[in-house]
Image (tube, rainbow, N blue to C red; front, side, top):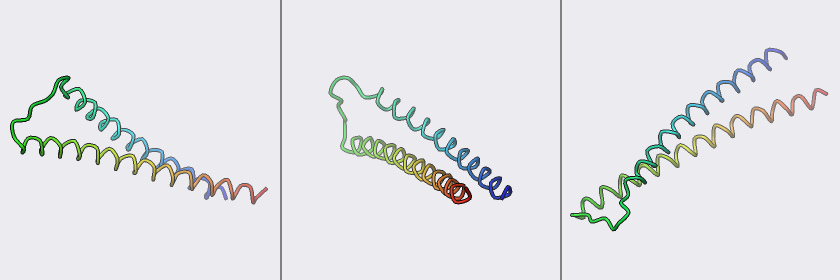
Length: 96
């Protein structure tokens, strides 16, 4: 039983480490988005060409997509971690 608990604790520790990595990545994405927002001019921007509009729109779309993917990965890591904790609590309740 002690080995199982130790294994679960180690798994939770690894899950927490992975969540910290995801959060670190999220921080970089949020910083990048903040820089993009700061670059938005306060007056009407003028783009010289259609290609410039397409490039800028594509860059913003890529950044937002990366952010949303990171949020999904964080949600998945939290769900996995909570599943392990809930199983452990269920095992503990059945043992009492």
